[in-house]
Image (tube, rainbow, N blue to C red; front, side, top):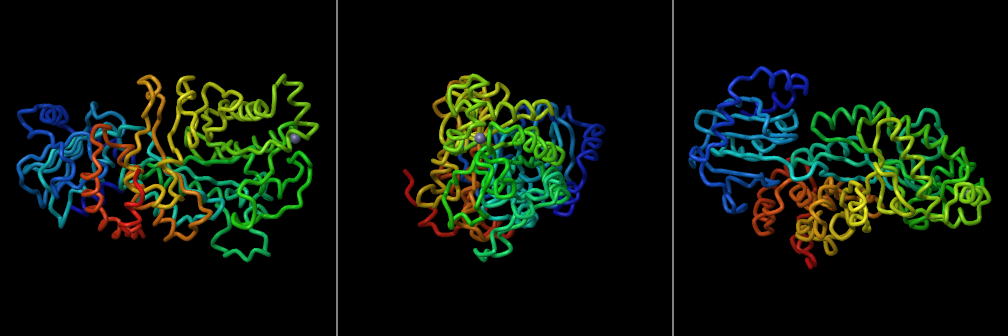
Length: 498
Ligand SMILES: [Zn+2]
């Protein structure tokens, strides 16, 4: 059956859709799934059955006969009720049947089947499943430290195995510009390399060509992972100003590209909001970004923008005056709104960090909440993705954010039902300034990322730490098999929980 599953996974999405359209028997299956007489009671103890160490825990699980299937063929059919990414999985003595509404549903059913299969044996079970949230994300910072394409692909594999579906790449920041922009080659010339005097290892710098990124997008799409690119503006732009001093307020720079720990956490560099050249430049960049990434969302950063330069810049002050703005916060809002308009005209939605709310936000823009703002943002009708430093920052130590603490997070806590409807989902963030080697990044991400995977997928009322811990421990051999260097120190994993 392993071979059979592997083959099905390799079938392209279009083939799967064609197969879905012609497969008979879906109505019978729907009837069986929906007939309580046919099924055992749903299992509500999520850690008690060693055969069912599923992670994330499915929406509904029924153990059927206590029997196992060893050599069954899997049959794939359609099921309109499964919805986006949803599926039904039926393992009986007669065989294995997957019913799903779309290709992602089939893919997720196969991940579940993979977790159920031990030594080529699958317990008889009936599962009805769908995600709680549409955005189940991880951000990797590729700027502070370059992340190899090989590491990105491995990360996508691991995310997909646990039904996560958004990889957010932080492609630009003070420490380096990581995406080829054909119209502005200087960005990946000087802008992607640390100055020689710092003697940084070559593996920590570099950039991705557009062709490499297109391949990565395809690789991710085959695993139902969407890649959201982030281009930081107007702050965190030291590397741009090193390459293009004419886009700064002062029009010059004496700087070089330095490793994070060799300079200030946040530089005073910011793109000049009074200079038309800044907008022309960013629009060039975004046009090339849009052509590479099919993601409906483009992340524009917007966090920690130091506004001192704007206060003393004649061009920025003139902009404040001519646009009737009150202060520099409103100038940032003007900046973001102009970029939003450009993205919107290209059919893309802007998303940015909490600070883009300052001074007002364009109606269609979404907010990635890291330091608050979800309350007012959702009240004003903006969609949000929750990634608070309190639970989702995985560059922090396990002492500060244990796996249990990450698992305790509820992205809609404190919001009304209407506001909760604007929560697209949640995301773990990893900033690559302290732990920089792949094995160390792995240790920071795993096993905590599995807690986020479950909080993003499983129904809210299935949250149960002791049961999750049993299932998590059962997944550790799988992580080892996948080559994950997870944090294995229970003392550190337990950490300070509350
Ligand atoms: Zn300026």
